[in-house]
Amino acid sequence: MKNIFKITYLFTLALILSSCSDDDDKLTLASEEASVINTPTNGQEFILNPLEEQTNIAITFSWDHSSYGTPTGIDYSVEIAASGTDFSEARTLATLSNTYFTMNIADFNAVVSSLGLPPFVSNTVDIRIKSTVGDPSQLPQYSDTVTISVTPFTTDLPRIAVPGNHQGWDPPTAPQLASSAFGETDYEGYVWLDGEYKFVAPNQTGDFEWGNTDWGDNGNFNGFLVVDDEVNCTATTGYYLVKADTDLLTYSAEAHSWGVIGNATPTGWDSDTDMIYDPATRTLRLTLDLVAQEAPDNGLKFRVNDDWTINLGDTGGDGTMEFSGDNIGVPTSGNYTIVLDLSNPREYSYSLILN
Image 1 (cartoon, rainbow, N blue to C red):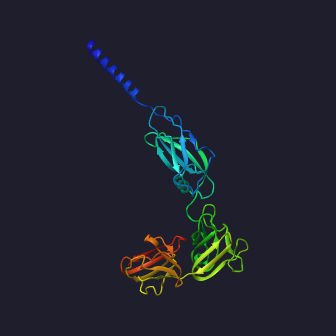
Image 2 (image 1 turned 45 degrees about the horizontal axis):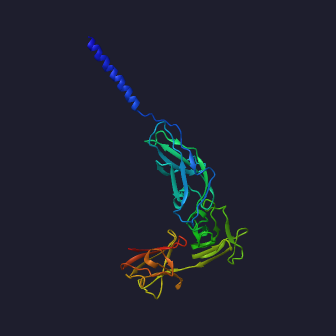
Image 3 (image 1 turned 180 degrees about the horizontal axis):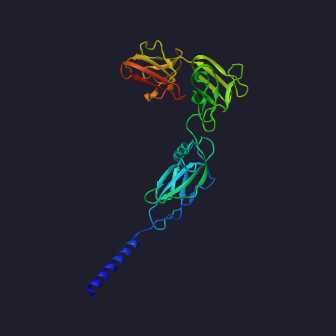
């Protein structure tokens, strides 16, 4: 009987010791101390330069380790959001185990622009560090928010809109003109006009709407623009190369009739075959039988008003059009739909579609 009691006692003791040993081996994790951001600092200003080498470092994020009460692997996410949004539409720049992260100019500019911040204007963004262990949804800790100023840029050419009778006087959907370069005020582009029209500038967020700066004719219809006491510009129905200089306050609209010419076309190099404007797509189109010809010595080109003063070709055959560029080759003889797209100002394109 005593032996049975001893065995039972020893077995119970072993269970208790085993249970204590298992508890000692378990790690208890708990949110204890969030990270502290060291760089950037509150109020720091970043002006991103489109002319600088885009692989140069624009910003460095660094922070202290967070704590979960016991040594463990921690993942850190760098989050950025437009100020005042409470990170509701935040972007995660990186998730890593290090406590630092750098971004070059191109990448940082792209992220900031994706937040909807207008270019060439100082804006504020919020930054925070999120730390997690294992499952990202478990025990997240957030650093205090750091707010910085950022001036992003765009490589898109500056634009103005041309609303008018031709499209229902609706600036957001109006055709646009583009300037020749950043900081330049000489705008141009192709527009189908049908009576009266005006020029409208974008607002700080890049939107075209009434209430923005707009220009009209000075009332003499001699090619000069004014901002105040203006009247609508006017043109007879047709397709125009429209130009406007918002510094010199001048404008012009020159009617252009585009055609296709070349030894790939039925009339060869002797005459054009005129193209037809399609208002639904804002492109010029033509269905024509073409003969296979090899560029750059042969093929076809696009030209204006049955004259060689203004013509478009494709130097290098890369699909990018250049004024007075090389002939465009035709790979196979057949019936084609030819499309000339001048709706994107200063970035013109074409397509040859075999029917």
